[in-house]
Image 1: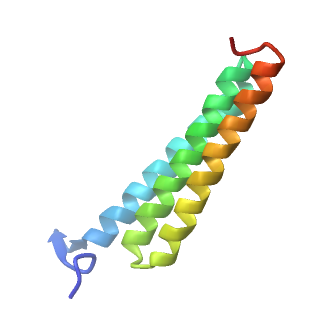
Image 2: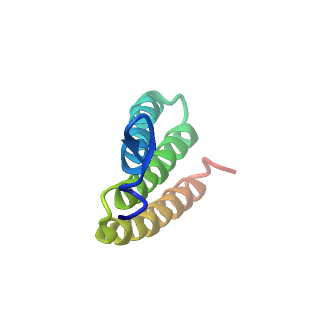
Length: 101
């Protein structure tokens, strides 16, 4: 028996709670999508997209633990690196145009 299969409370397992938290993070990501689309400034949109990327990494990590699938964790790490590079590239683009500073 693994930790994910262990019964915690009222017949629910740790895996069930992890899947529920992943669903909660998904709802929060959908809410942040509004800010990415309707942000009043470019900085709001960049920050919202960065938060969405970070939220995606967290969801993948939680799913990796809940489903006992280590491949999801590898995908989450690669996605985190791509998210970081995207944030740097957009920031550099807006600085060159004089938008951030």
